[in-house]
Image (cartoon, rainbow, N blue to C red):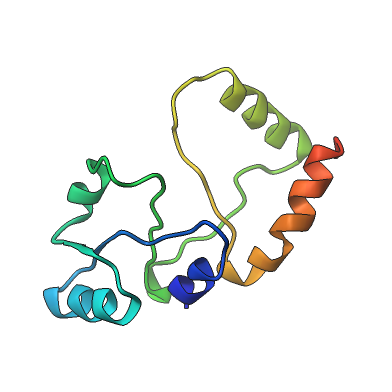
Length: 113
């Protein structure tokens, strides 16, 4: 479900994959023309060829919760993130909300935070 929606986004290219089993990673790589098949996620996070990583897990492994309980906590996290030059983490909404990204970016550029 995630890969086709990611590939629909302009500028997105999937270049590496690691799945739990060799059969699974080979199948996905062939189906979506992903050139580099890795045997572990550790290989991907140390790759110089990757700008962003998507971690997709089966529904039985999902644990979804809010990062912040309210706007004040969200603002505090935002301010903390701006004071660090390190990439720490990025949480991405489910792929079925990607169609709203352009609108969200517009609101942010207009100063709605």
